[in-house]
Image (cartoon, rainbow, N blue to C red):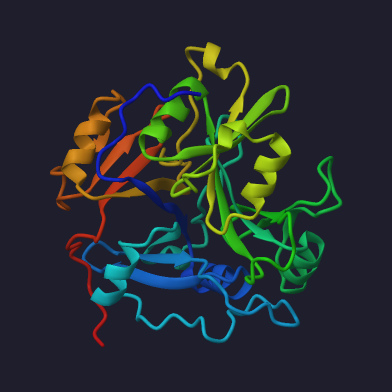
Amino acid sequence: MASTFAKVVGRPTWQQTMLRIKDPKKSIPFYTDLMGMTVIDTLDFPQFNFKLWFLTTLPGTSLGGSRDPTPPEGEKYNLTPGTKEAHDYMWSIEGTVLELTWNYGTEKDPSQKYYPGNGDKDGFGHVAFNTDDVYAAATKLEKAGVIFKKKPDEGRMKGLAFAYDPDGYWVEIVKRNEPNKIPNYFNFSQTMMRIKDPSKSIPFYEALGMTVVRQKNYGDFSNFFLASNVDAGVDFSSLSDDEAKKRCSMMFGPVLELTHNHGTEDDKNFKHFNGNEEGRQGFGHIGFLVDDVYAACDSIREMGYGFKKEPDGGSMKGLAFAYDPDGYAIEIIKRGGIEFGDKKVET
């Protein structure tokens, strides 16, 4: 599907997926201790009563005999989250992080619950992690107390699983094509969002520098998998589905999975919920790093979907939130970061 928009200037790369969490004492250990992620940075805003954690899968160096998700020796992260040094690292990475947003006090409110998606007309679907052996991984997670929506042998699609994280978000567990190639037990591998019309959404994300690395028509729905920083020497549009599937499963960084239920594009009244509506808040946004926020937003503005926040809007200058064709919030952040006004950690 050829892009119909000019490329956004400033080398945009997909840098984050944001989810709201109720209790960091439950959610952070789930993603670090069980899913093998590392907290690489935090932003704390006591003046606004919220804190952000940024987690990613760091490359491992050793397979280890037990294939345990504990980070291998030698791969310890040496920066202190919340410091300027960690900020500099986090806002310059070429990979993608999971941003977990905690509003102070939600963990003390028994009635408070975030909305995990996957109801009628919901847009956000899930995050996912790849692993060598889905069955062994599911057994390990179940022994650790994780509850499953779908175990590997349940349902029509055998060999993949869906676990629940502490807030009820779906976490898909997907098998890698080749074992023993990626040393990490798990690697963060996808964010799934539903789209109304691929003829609009795919060009939008291609303009943001992403490449369709695989697409698959299942009859009544289609999946499009997009990634930043792909191998420029590979013509993904020429690959067979088997070849594209194998490549996707062996990518270390995540893909953005856009799911299109056929026919929604013909219904002028159809609209997905974007995760920020009252009573449906859970998923928040995805974000892209760019060299120049103002220049990038000039390019994005030409696509005609509007802005939730212009670069100079609000109290935090120099970052923006654009809308994609489905109304999802797309954060546009300066590569290298800005002065966020957070309470920094002293070292």
